[in-house]
Length: 147
Image (tube, rainbow, N blue to C red; front, side, top):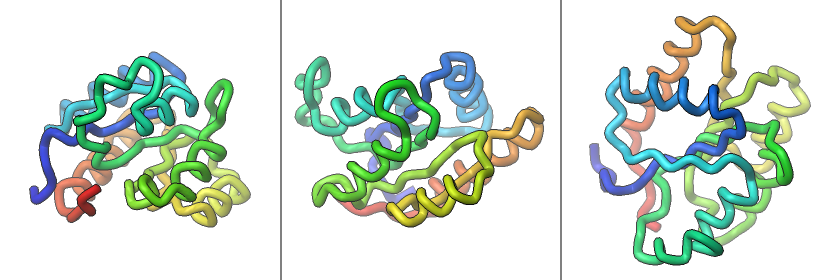
């Protein structure tokens, strides 16, 4: 892999159960990135802008990618996506929407505002694991920008 292994993978997910399942599957399929968890859009932006409790991370690399749920408390995933993709400093970070919504309106909105991929969180564990395997393969073969 060509990108820096110290770059974290930022997972923005409000459900602890969904986050723990995703983290477990990522480890099972061989993810090597450190994982950072933000439970909502506000905390994700604090992490990206190194604000609040993340000020000490000023020398930490930006995430290699962001896995973003749409249905979040407070600032939702759509608003978070829009803010990140309109920011000159952050807009090159790949954002993969990982949502249970297959609503075409949600899908179209996310691509309109710069999502790099839209993947479904399925309720069938084997299907969900296959989705995450594809995601990890994409991360492994992709060349990412230097931020």
